[in-house]
Length: 321
Image 1: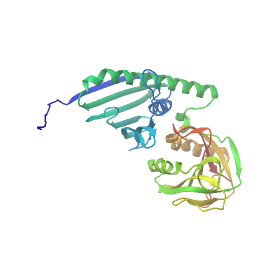
Image 2: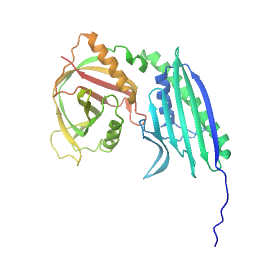
Image 3: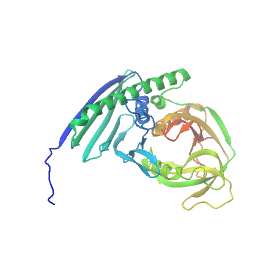
Image 4: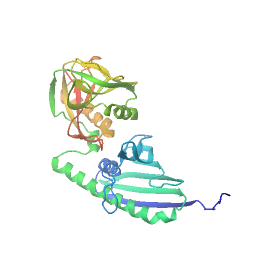
């Protein structure tokens, strides 16, 4: 039987939206990640939760469980809190390609968001109206979420991430008794290496299943912080006894005194908060303890942190003397 060929021209569309939001740029950026992730929904308010990995090459996809789902795209570029760019087929199940961009700027406490979705492929014109309606809903939800988050920060008396450039004060001193940690450990570039996120992805399947695990808190433990990089461990506390699954390592963390600081928001903003911490230590009267046997930073992730949105409250422990 002869193959019938139907000629169809490649079609394109472009959707552009601009929005002004009365909230700091970092809060708006965090709201984008949340709304594009677990809080995503259809215009009729039907939940459509997604997973968005906020680092270069990170996936944006629907996870339906049992190895089922739908890949929508990958992060092509991300520069928190100014840019998020995603490329991929998105919701189209035929030959098509899309580029989605969120660009943010801030002036006098007002964040200007410019959104662009450009696409090319088959039957694109038929999708334009529905896509425009869908993105209008997403932008509206981002706006509402950012305003709610900003109000919450004001009510609780917290500063936004932008204040991370200012000196921060510790919330308490912790006389840490020491512990044995088990997890994955690697060497990374200093200042927010996206491969740290990949290590956490790999370790997340072990949390709650590590033999001898103590409690449910997870820890990011960092040694040898310098311009050349840092050693970072994704871990949980364990008892000293018992064999570990292949690939996991055990580290004994000695007793020490730590100044405890709080980070609020997305994990991608922790390097910014660290800048404020080091500035604060210089004027707080505490002296940074430099000891190769003691971690230079311990991140504590408990019930205050949401692993789905990668946002929440994280304790940052810095050794002092």
